[in-house]
Image (tube, rainbow, N blue to C red; front, top):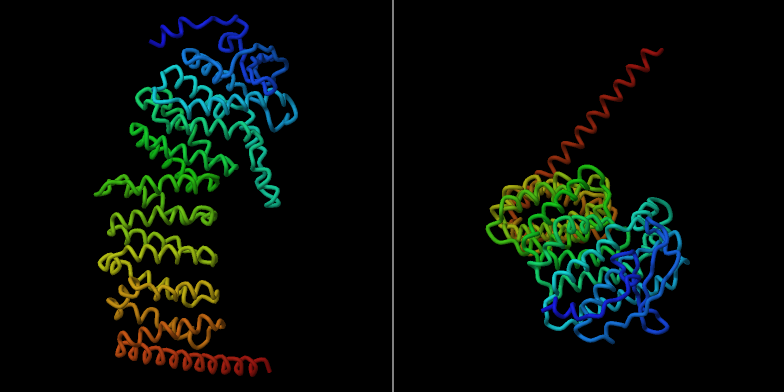
Length: 474
């Protein structure tokens, strides 16, 4: 049917065929019409001259002509400009392309109930690829992004100058992928593994606006194209491996993890072995990176999703956190404690008992921290009913571990808020098991007395040695 309709369309002069001789068409702002532009240079880097060929807008043509005109507009949008090096050049042509992009987006949005034919999908993906993947100016801009220096300058430099066009291209791709008129069986021939791989590479963009669009588009592709799901997970796996083991630098880790969070949320039970390996080999080691604050919220969500789906993984996760526990970074330590509390809320008693001894030793160190926020956050764990219940069931083992840190806090910590919280925790422990509490108190006092005696003994020994050395010097 479409061939019969296209056969009746009036043929344009050869000079108007962008796909034959490098020309393109675009709407003119002044007369709401379209022009075709021809590149003067053979490599297509500059638009030195424009040859105008008047064409109607999509809304002004009959239904039978819309598809052919839409394809021409998509080909026009394959023209790429250098916004970074030549911001004031080809201003009219840039605006023509921008208006054309807006028009094709509107066409996709308002395109009724008919399925997009294969030529439309093919041209749409070609146009997107030309602007996002085959644009040399995009790479030049990324290479110029500052790596160090003033933060405000970095933020300003990280905004892509091509965004006025790229935003509409991303919007177009999102609308095409999400449209009910897009047939997944046809589209997967063009939105293939190569296309997805290049899309994932773009997540390293310094521009947060670009990463936000990429995240949404990847969500849609993962949802619509089931055939690509294993490939997407494997590729994201590899990118995260490279980030953890090699570079330690990537701008889109938070967005990756946000996508993965929704993927993990949809995992069926029982969890596959490959998914458990992803938790232990990727998600847990991500905690050791210096740039953890950039993506900790999303990472924590992913980890907790695993524990909520399979509580037996709690032991593995907690031991992994202890392995990468920060030593000198108090802000990261607070992040770990926040995540730990959420994990413990989803932890059953059996799994808790497997890791409680090393865990409580670490908590005791946090309680003894001179940084008041770390000590305060560790004390707040007792405000959680589920955590308190886990401790109460194992008080005979846990209380002797944490009691010395609590007692020292109550008597000698410099921060009054920490002292007050410590007194509250000690009261709870005393009420829970008075006999054990008194036993721990006696043991603590004995240890303190022994430490004091040893200190005096060592001091006396040193005094005697000093006298001997002084007498020999005479």
